[in-house]
Image 1: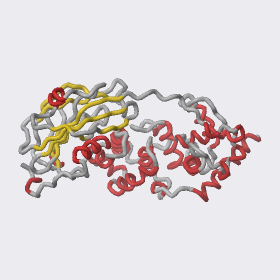
Image 2: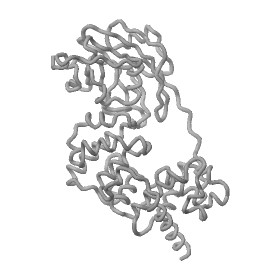
Image 3: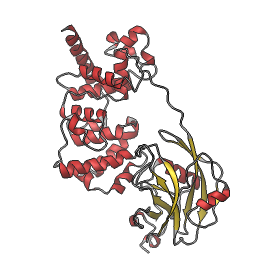
Image 4: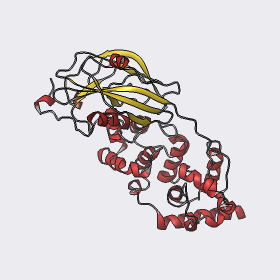
Length: 407
């Protein structure tokens, strides 16, 4: 009984703290709205609150309901997501929206178990949605919550092995009422007070009950298993512009790393950079290609990437190009785990320099586009880095209205 009373007291103390110190976040404007809760939680996976806020507002303004999002084209969703990273989340977001809108009558499942049937919804996300949107007595154990619970109970078993224990302990603290507020309070406590370094224990509502603090080990908890070294992959990119200033982009296959996103043509990724002769053989078409000094670096979850950039200014577009297609990884295409294959394909040019004419090539081949507008296309961060390096501060020339029409 004392243990139960202590845990109820802890929950109430955290809720009292939250009522005074809660963060003002855009997705908390309408508590109980499962669409907004789901959207924000998917965006927040492996991403910071600061990075998500602007994207969330943009999505809600453009697609205010799950039915609106389901009606959107995947390319539109990917373009709106560009820059937020982990693009499998965007693809699953669109899939899940279609499931809810078309198979569930626009109503989200109310339990964590049912929510996990939606694409892209794992244990944490299901718990968060169930608690915040439906007041289900579920624990939402993100990294912040895991850190708080590990310190509160002095759990020194390394992650990820300790996840199940932390989830069980977190769930034991969830109150009968205000489960959603409790979940968000735990996140806020970890984000603002029980931080990774130099936690502000003097401001914590649980300081006197924290076993980690009592033992003087709070700051080193949770213990994390050593990370494996990330290999470095190397390759080349080809940035071509025509006389109107349009840039050649190609669409990656739907499955695999950065699936469905746009990019300039790339060569294979391997342990070494290709020689100049090998690089020119990988180019999408013959032109006066020029290798730029320096390179582009980008980190994925499981490997680092270094890219050398070649550029060409052409007077007329080639009739045919060849591409080195991406090849899905052996890890079922987890974001951050892919390699490039070297199998070339031929793609016919589209009829327009604008984004509106993404032209389907033969079955299994990659779409391509010549575009002067890079601001509203599905370009992931690494590809924007490549283009920025190619332009070196110069914006691509804007085509005149006539050149933007269908040819």
